[in-house]
Image (cartoon, rainbow, N blue to C red; front, side, top):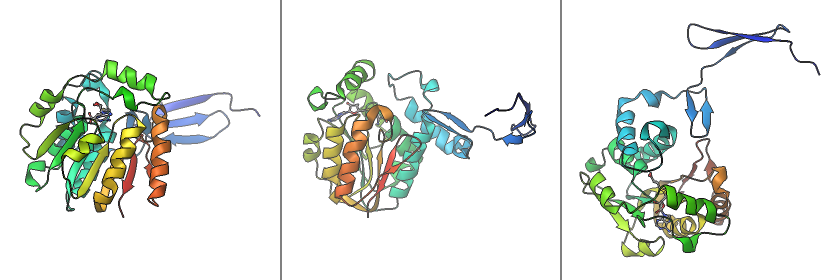
Length: 260
Ligand SMILES: C[S@@+](CC[C@H](N)C(=O)[O-])C[C@H]1O[C@@H](n2cnc3c(N)ncnc32)[C@H](O)[C@@H]1O
C-alpha cells in the first residue's frame, strides 16, 4: 500500500500543529500535556498548574531520595493519583497506611495536600528503611530488586522521622512486612498505598488489610502495571479475584482498587 509522498506540519497559535499530507488529508494534532514516567497524553493535566499540588509535590520529591535529580524525576501524575485517593479517604473513617516508604516521596506529598494535621487520623509508614529483604525476592524479581537496593535504598529512618516531624500523626514503623504489621493494632484503614517492588510482601500486606479496609476505602498499587514488575500484577490479580474484585490498571503504571 502506498502512503503519502510527504507530510508538512505548521505550528498553530494555540500550540496545536496543522498537518498536511500530500494525499490531501489534513489533521490537527493536539498538544501533549504530559510526557514522562511512561505516560504521554494530550489530555487535560491542569493539576500540574495547581499551586496546592505543586507545593505538595515539591515537598515530596525533595525528601532526599537517591533515585535521580528531583527536578528530573517527573512522577507528578502518580503522585497526583495518590493525592486524589487520600483526599477521597480523608472523608472516610479509618487511618492511612503506606507499605514501602523509602524517603517518603508520595506520603510527604499526601500529608501536605490533604493537610493531614487537620484530620483525626494516624498515618502508618511501614518499611525496613534499609531496602528490599533478599529472602522475599523470587528468582525473577531478584536482579531488579538487588539493583534497586544498590542504587536507591539506604538506611533512611532518621531522615524520614525528620521529614515528617511536623506531622505528629505520622508513625514510621521499621521492620519487615508482613511481620511488622502485627506490631500495631490498626482497626480500620481508609487509604492504603502499596509500593514494595516485589510480590510476596505486597500480597501479605493486602491480605492483612483487606478486611480492615472501610467500605469505599482506596488501595493504590504503585508498581501494578509497570512492565518491570509483572510478577506483582499476576499475584495481585489472583488475590483480588479471591476477594471477587478487579484492580483498575492505570496509564501511570499504578493499580487502583476500591473496597466494597
Ligand atoms: C519504591 S520504594 C518506596 C517508595 C515510596 N513509596 C516513595 O513514595 O518514595 C520501595 C520500598 O519498599 C521497601 N520494602 C520492600 N520490601 C519490604 C518489606 N518486605 N518490608 C518492608 N519494607 C519493604 C524498601 O525498603 C523500599 O524502601
